[in-house]
Length: 91
Image (cartoon, rainbow, N blue to C red; front, top):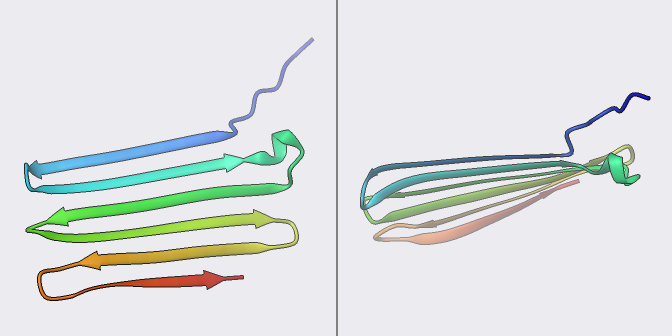
């Protein structure tokens, strides 16, 4: 009897410190739910950069199925003279 193994979860984490005040962080998660009879792939990617008292953060979430490909994104930034956010939805 042979068994077939499939990867259903992938997590990638990257953190880089240039000094105590500057950091670059990236997280990627991918999940294949087909193994659980759910016909959807899920992915999340985030990126955060703190440099010279500035914060830039973004996230991207996607859901892929045979019927639908949805993507949600947002960006947040905080700088010395301004801050804001942007949210995007793609269907």
